[in-house]
Amino acid sequence: MGRLPCCEKAHTNKGAWTKEEDDRLVHYIRVHGEGSWRSLPKAAGLLRCGKSCRLRWMNYLRPDLKRGNFSEDEDQLIIKLHSLLGNKWSLIAGRLAGRTDNEIKNYWNTHIKRKLVSEGIDPQTHRPLNETSNKNSTAKPKPTAPTELDFRNAPTVPKTISVSAPPLDFKHSEFQVKAKSESIEGGNCTSSGMTTDEEEPQHELNLELSIGISSAGSAESKRKVDSNTGCRFVGETMAVAAKPKTVCLCWQLGFQISEICGNCEHTNGLFRYSRALSS
DNA sequence: AAGGTGTACAACCGCGTCTCA
DNA sequence: ATGAGACGCGGTTGTACACCT
Image (tube, rainbow, N blue to C red):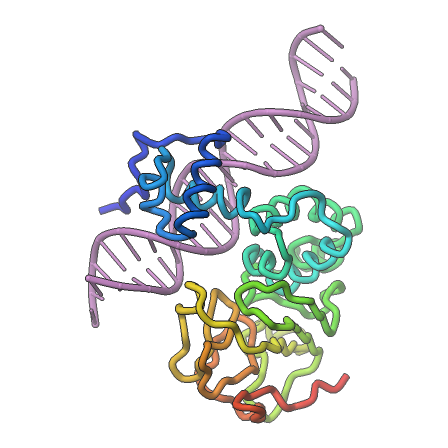
C-alpha cells in the first residue's frame, strides 16, 4: 500500500501563487501563527496543498526574509559551510540570517558552483579540480553527506571558522567550528566516522560546536531532547534545553553524544570541551 | 523583430524523520 | 511498541525573463 497523497490533488491549485492567495496566507498566519500546515489551507480558504503553503511562507512570505543579492561575505560563508556540511541547505541557511535553504540551494547551483569551477575548485569536494579528476580515475567518489565528508587536504577549509550566529534555533550562540588537522588522542572526542579511507594519511578533523543556552518555548525547542544530556537536537544541530541537566558541549558534527565524554570540564552546570586545541 | 538559448528562482515531488495516539 | 499522519529536507522541474544570433 502506497503512501497517501498529502492533499486532495483534484481540488488544489498548483503553480505560481496569486497576490490574493499570498494575502490570505499571510493574514491567516498573522492571526493564527505557523504550523498545522495540513489543515491550514482549508482554514485559510486556500485551494492549496499544505506543503505548498508552508513552502510559500518559508521561502517567500516570511517577514524576516532578506531579499536581494548575496554579498561577498555571504558567498564566502556559504562556501565554507558547504565544505563542512555538504548539501545540508537547511543547516547552511540556519547560519545566514534572512536566507532560506531553497534560496541558498538555488544560489549555489546557479552562481557558486560556476564560480568555484572557474577558480579550478571542485564544488562538491572543495578540492582543486585536477586533483579531484585524478582521484576519481582511481577511487570511488565520496558522497557528500556531512558525516561522510572528507575534509583532508580540502583547500578551502580553514582551521577555524567563526560565524556570527543569527538568532535561529540555537539562539544566543556563537557557532564555532574548529577544524583541527590532528586527531585528539586519549579521550572520547575523536573524529571517528569522518572518514573510512585507510589508504590515505590520517589527518582527522575535530569539529567542535561551542553552544550556549537556548531560550525556551519555541515549538521546535520542545522536540528531540536527549534524556541523558538535556541536549536538544534539531537535525544535525544541537541546542541546550531550557532547563539543562548535565550538558556536554563537546559535539561531533553529525553524531549524537549519549554521555558526557572524558574531555569535558564542568563550568556553571555545563560541560565544555577542555582539551585545548593548540594550533 | 523573431526564434533560440541560457539563467534565475519559485514551486513541486518523493522520501526520511518525528510526533503522538 | 507500533503505525498513521504531519513535517521538513534535498533534488528536480517548470517557467519567466534576459541575452544572443
